[in-house]
Length: 313
Ligand code: SAH
Ligand code: AVI
Image 1 (spheres, rainbow, N blue to C red):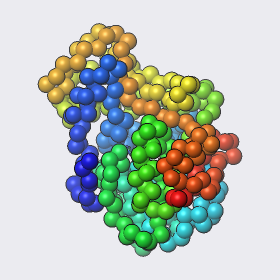
Image 2 (spheres, rainbow, N blue to C red):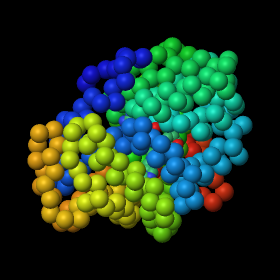
Image 3 (tube, helix red, strand yellow):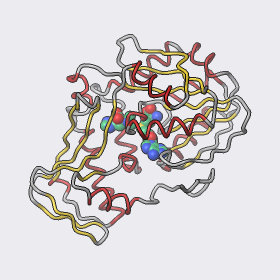
C-alpha cells in the first residue's frame, strides 16, 4: 500500500472518483464516510456537535474535563501528542493545556478543518510546535515523530466507530507502532431511542451532512444527483450494534457520475456510514486482539461515552 509522506500535498481527493464508482456499482450501493468531510461537510459536522440531540461531543468533553488530571498522568506530560481525525480540535485544546506536549501532530483528511484548527492553535498556544499532516488514516501513514520518544496517540470523538471492526483492528495495529499509549474515545451502547434522536435531529443538520456527500460528488466529479430526490435515513441496527446512515432514492431514477450511469429503484439506498457502539468490554477485547492492554477507563456521569487508556504490549 502507498505510504504518505508527512507534509505531502493533501490527499483529500485521491481515489475519490474510483471509490464512488466502485461503491455505486455494488448491489447494496455504498460510499465511504471519509468523503463527508469537504469544507461544507466539516462545517456541518461542527454544527452537529452543538445539537441538543447529539450527546456524543458534550459527553466526551464533560468526561475529559472531569478526569483531565488523571488522563494527563496516563498520557505523560511533555510527550509527543499525535491526534487522528482532529477536526476542529475542541477536545485537543484541553489535552494540550494539560499535557504541554513537545510536539502536536494533528492528522486529518480534511485539509480545510486541519488548516483552520492549526491556525487557531498557533494563536492560542504560541509555545506549541504544531505539525499538521493531511492524510487518510485508512492507509498506513508515515508521521513526523521521533521514534523511541514517549508518545501518545489520541483518537477522540468515536471516529473509530465509523470503521468496521476489521478496519478498527488494522488502525489499532498501525498506531501501536507510533506510540506506546493510546487514548481512544468510544461511544457506548445505549437506549436505541437516544441513538435514533442523535442521528435524526429535529433541525435536519445530520440530514444535510448526509446529503452533502451527493452535493460533493456533483461539485467535484461532475455528478448530476438531484438532491431533493434522496432522503436521509438513519436507524440503529441492534444485532450489529451500529447506527447505519443511508440516502434513500425517492423515485426510480438514473444518475450520471464520472461518465457512468447508475440506476436506482424507488426506495433503494446508498449506505453512507456506520457508527458502531461498543460496551467497554467489547472495545477492550477488540483492542486486546490488536496488542493493547486496557489500563484506564473513564466515563461521563451518565454512562453515555467512554475514554479508554490503552498500553501497547
Ligand atoms: N475529533 C473531532 C472530529 C471528529 S469528526 C471530534 O471529536 O469532534 C471525524 C474527523 O475525522 C473529521 O475531521 C474527518 O475529516 C476525519 N476523518 C474521517 N475519516 C478520515 C480518514 N480516513 N483519515 C483521516 N481523517 C479522517
Ligand atoms: C465522526 N463520527 C464519530 C460521527 C458519528 O457520530 O458517527 C459522524 C456523524 N454522523 C452523523 N452524525 C455524526
